[in-house]
Image 1 (cartoon, one colour):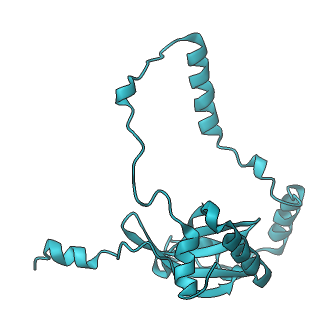
Image 2: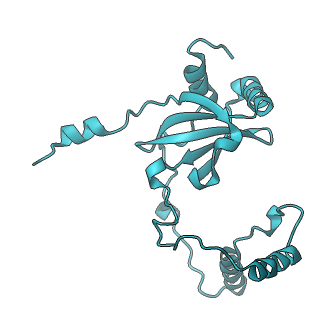
Length: 194
């Protein structure tokens, strides 16, 4: 059997710039295991008011939008979430992409020894924090690499200048800047004015 190029192109997701909102669900329904990547959505200056209204409405309702969106030629299911005054799009895994404990070879749960459970509880209690301090989330490997590069730069050792014409210009990728409010208005509004 042979599949022609035209047939493959027909299977590609539509390169539409519209976010198709399918529903609004309770925010806590978006299980962290489903989240692949997160993006902050930024409005154009002309749509800041509409953006703020949507953030406020979604926050007060404690709802997340579920939508489909094409990015870089691939269709994604995304959750649109209001968080700390912003809208965030989180790409979601398809349900068949989420691996179960059995998928990764974990044995079935057995009844744990009560004394062992208590020992683990005590060990956990010693490490309890009231909240997550995001300043602790540091990429130490990248920091060590930056420090090493800065030391070499200061010493002038192993430093090579790059010719200006060797630097690639920024891509004019049409996915680079998306007017999120326009896309959401089209999907939501199909008549709503912002």
